[in-house]
Image (cartoon, rainbow, N blue to C red; front, side, top):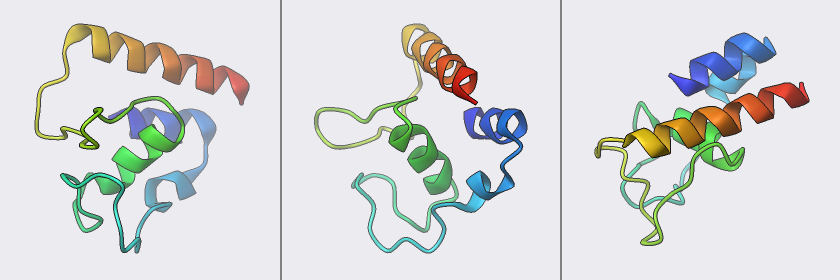
Amino acid sequence: MLEDVLVKLTGDEKISSAYFNHEKSPFPDVRPTSPIYNAVMNMTTRGIMVGEYSGEFRANQPVDGAEALLAIRVLKQHINIY
């Protein structure tokens, strides 16, 4: 969802496929072949979201309210750069 917002606000359609064809993931719980891999990489490489200290992203775990608000705030700051 945040990736879609980033694409729409920046007008950069390349964002939605920027990490296709990667062979190795920095997160053991998110494989490069996963449908969410591109979104995870877009959010983490821009500092909008972060992985856990364990190295995992926890893609299958719920995001609590504080994490969601922080991600939205960072996305807003990132968009103001454009």
